[in-house]
Length: 205
Image (cartoon, rainbow, N blue to C red):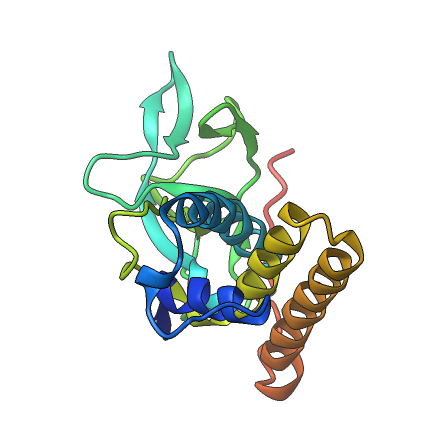
């Protein structure tokens, strides 16, 4: 996955509002704190705006529980990446199966739940979104997915304009951020010809 540093995004936003962005030290500490807080919000917004391929995974997971407790998969399993939003659960590996069989499930709290009367396999494949990192002013060299960087930069510029009371400019930057997200999504689906995966739901009844 291509990445850029958080610092580079902050500096670009700082420059857009007419400030000296030759060095991150030129951003006052108070402004840095505000920008990093705004960056966390902006990154989460952009992260969940679409099911970006760079931020999604398809992994085989062990189904937990038994006939008494019910069958489930916790979003956080020992030794596994914590899951964000879940998009699909299948019996077959979608990477190697043309039409993977989809398992019936529901999302309850922090787990994927399966019907009690269903025939449940030992493992299944889950397509999910990873969770965004949380950034701090102490580590501005931490990386951000490049696919989100321009949109995040526009949203940070909007935050700076809003702090300065320039709401028209802030709205313009927010519109630019949305257009950037649309362009990146279209690049994936249309230019790179990557359609969404098909699946077939299994009928238990």
